[in-house]
Length: 148
Image 1 (cartoon, rainbow, N blue to C red):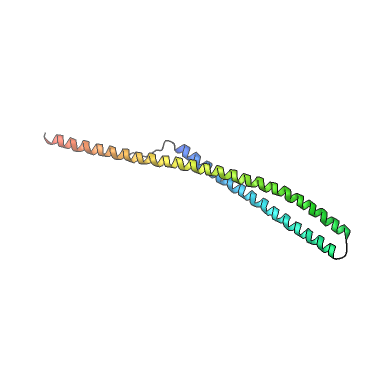
Image 2 (tube, rainbow, N blue to C red):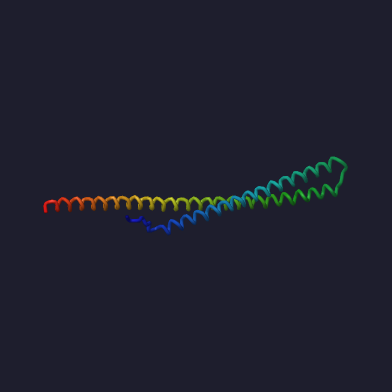
């Protein structure tokens, strides 16, 4: 019996590897975004703690040095939060790009799998037609040789 060999199997294999790479890249970018968002949350907590410290130092006895230190720390953290917001936007853009690549890779792989399925269906039809032809030839041969 004939064996089905897909002529573009190597292309399908490459598409599957590209899809795997795209999944890995997407996961890495998603992880990077998560880390950046966690950093922003930590900065927000630090900002809150310094603001509370500044309020408490202003409400108790006036400690100018402590208030100045807290205000400087608040300014520094706000600057860091601004920079972190930029990093988050960049990470989100990277996630979006990775998702586009992943979507394209999945579509390419599915297209090649469909082509393989169609080729296999055609192969089965060809085999069936060949078998029918052989059966007809056998019946014809037996019928023609019956008279002899």
